Image 1 (tube, rainbow, N blue to C red):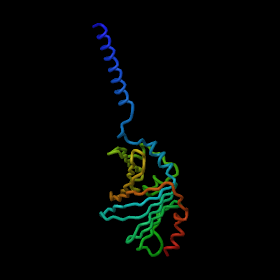
Image 2: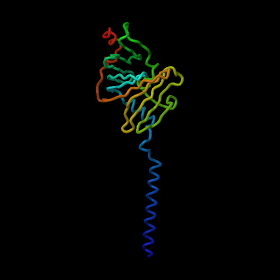
Image 3: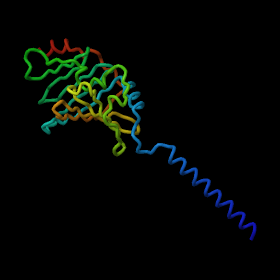
Image 4: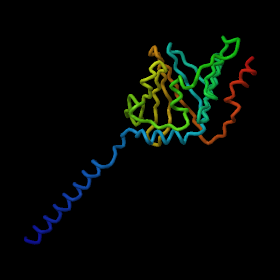
Length: 209
């Protein structure tokens, strides 16, 4: 009987030991649903030098446009909208140019730094609490809202990432009037060489005119 009691005590101690290990693991290890850290998001964006993707854009009036997106960081983006829209948007050389069927005397031009997309395209992305107004996890996705509180008129961008593996899923742009435009990325390809001429606003102006 004495031997049985000793064995029971040993088993009980082993059980407690493993319970403590499990509890310690759950406390110290991140949850599977934990949001992606700002440092990890910053590193991901900085490593995202080239990207080609199909996109679906949901406009403020509920209409939907589609097209092809090109990103060549830093500073360059091109959105080719499919018919019947046929709009072309190019970010390059510090400017954003919008070519549409209504413009007869060249594109509409404005500085890239005045748009929330500047955060995504800038040379060295370093996200921190000063420019992040929200940072949350939802259904295995992490989203951040980036806004320069000193330049509220520039609007804000909500970027959405898949958690594992980390991947940019799209973004929502909000202007000063709180109107939202959502962009969803599909069929993303990072292993592609994107030529520089696609981001040449002057060359695009000559072609369009």
